Length: 236
Image (spheres, rainbow, N blue to C red):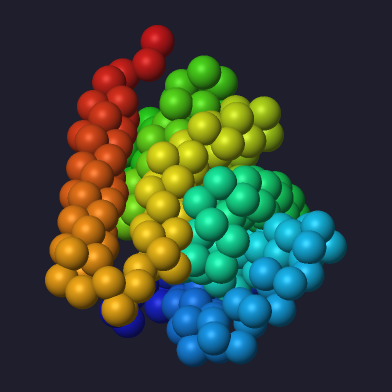
């Protein structure tokens, strides 16, 4: 732990950005869950202006690493329904990727690239990402599929590694779709649950949640295996 903190200090402001992108989304997400009963009615009643404001808030909060994208997708599905919630939060998440990428590009400096070059494996991965735009797109999409790696952290690291903007944006736009859709679906099922429906309603909700979790974990596992194979394959 001491070594990790020392490494972050050596990276300067970029090290702080890395730490913030991993920690702050947990705090913001906890606050959103706590205030969901107060926020939800206003969002549903706000119409198109409310949807635009929610997409913008998603872009800013997630782009500044203040909120977890999956928590916002769950909230969007719960408050707005599957398709509306998915569409709005997807636009916001792509916007967040653009914002975090732009910020990291400005803050990251030679210290981060020097740290990459100090590790042979990291240097190999970095060279592959920079020299192979199509491969960088695939790697970005696979990273976005994984539910384990924090959303903001991926953007920060790939921006600092000087991945091409086009590969980053297309890879992100493709990679976030499956897990965002699954979480928005789970949120919509929670909203549709009727406590007075009896055991049948509870069983339906339970099956929907279990199926969502299983698919979510399977997508993450498949993405991790594919990413490992990709990074272990040397580039020409």
